[in-house]
Length: 218
Image (cartoon, rainbow, N blue to C red; front, top):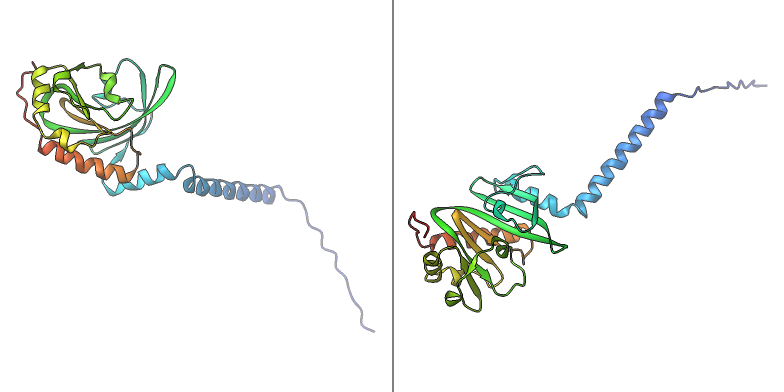
């Protein structure tokens, strides 16, 4: 008759193996969380990073100081939540507290050659505008239903009123000229790559039709 031999194999508990399995589990959970976040709540940030890389913008690490001329806002607390720049053009998303309300602002800042006293086209189609917080004087005689002209200098306000800038701007977008900077307030629109391309194209048209200002700011 055949004889069967049964060999009993015993295994010893290994803390090393347990720790390795726990480590692999944590890594898997972490990767899954990152993938889910990129596809859901972080989708906007991922799209922003990809667009910035394709168009040679640099994402600025936060917290970051306010880029000029936003650092001149004094009547409310403003902090940037997204900043992307090429050095010449800066896109910034802002959050602020004003009258105990949390507000979000979108702006594009572009360097220009002419030197302007603070002068702006404030859109009449919006209830709130980022331009309101620069506290500029209204020039009612030069204003229209679509845009109110505000600024430090009557001469600069007249030059802006006589230009083609109002015809180029949509009714929900504001324009500020200050020093050698052009600021476009597009807070009424999404802060996304589609709008970035539109705003940048609009900025080029605005700059092309911008009247030249002399060095004096009177």
